[in-house]
Image 1 (tube, rainbow, N blue to C red):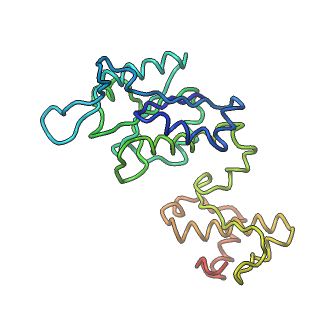
Image 2 (image 1 turned 45 degrees about the horizontal axis):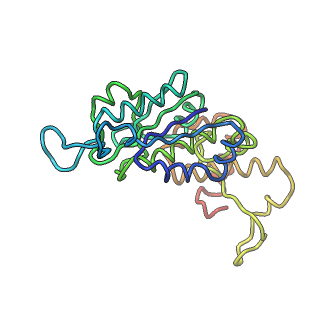
Image 3 (image 1 turned 90 degrees about the vertical axis):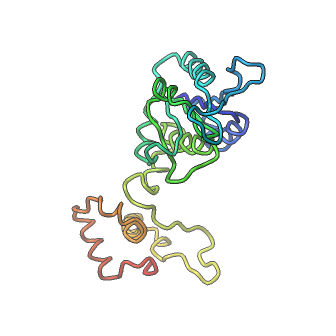
Length: 251
């Protein structure tokens, strides 16, 4: 997979995305992440990328022309179909299903806006979809672009060591992840649940499923309502939870 990020701060974005798991994945050739300085594609000596908004108002708007030339260069280098995303508070809220969907594409272009936004004509001509991280506004699109890149790339085959690394994670299967524990077995008087020390992998699996159900219902009832809990095993776990109590303190 190839991702090109169009930004006014390529060094900052590139440094973050070249570390840890994504850095190793790039070294091994599973993914390619490029950052492009939009100012390099201006046609004026000042490398100006913004201008006043038509109709008046405070702030400035990123102009279409340098964005277009930067986008066009990324398209040419991709040498194949591209999918262009503009990171915008006006977009649909990004979720795990989007990360999985986008990870199956060969070429992504992420456009980072600034100021009061970007010229709508560039969006109309070049952007395939707009994505938001949530109902809030950031100074620029870089943080959102890095978050989307990270979430998408870790779904690309080979980036993580094994599918088990993400299949039990929050949101992947519609549930929040179960509680995790490590050494020591007792810390500040708090003990690890005995079942996790039992060595019985099937019982551990059932316990984790139960805790995911408990946590999801408590913290994200909207997600819980969408679950299909018709299996024999889930019905048994639900009966146990009703008996034990749904409160997370019942661990």
